[in-house]
Image (tube, rainbow, N blue to C red; front, side, top):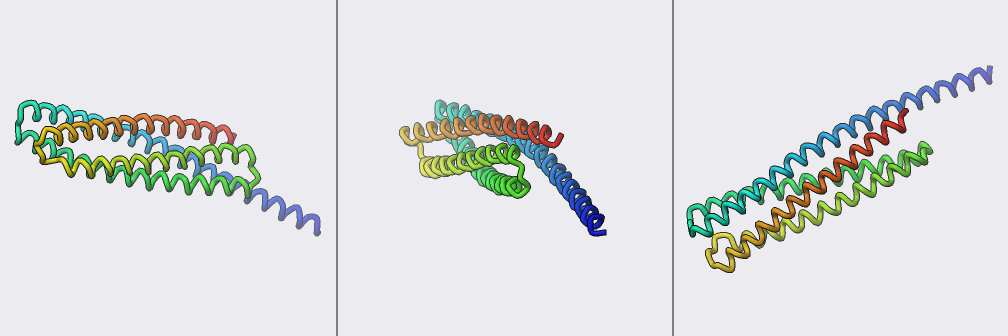
Length: 203
């Protein structure tokens, strides 16, 4: 009777563990799909940001060349709107990156508990990627804030030196947006790779 009870308890424990693992697998698959969808949305947004800033730069150059005050004021109004949007997006992306770091930390801890050394190595690498992404986003946000602050100082001035500085800052913002496109493409590649790895581990 004792052996039968032990065997029954062991089989129930194993069945419960298998169900728990399957539940975690479903959750991870859903997270993988969500991250890829999110990356694709971010890439579309990043490309739109580049196009918007390139348009502002072209309009700025035309207004400056023609010394058209009304056109220059309209460009600067549009630039202020874009700066507000860009800063809000940067803050939201940083929060999303921090959330991914927390999730990666949980996965690494879970792998240790469940004794999955192969998965642990993959999850540690994913955590390193997520920490790097968060650091890059912090640096991007700081750079964008510094550019915005300086732009707010020079916008409205029609002094030639201030106009040249304003143009340079718009170019820097545009390059920062292009850099984000490259980073989002890299993130999309990493998340697709992680999705493939997770799928292989569950077979």
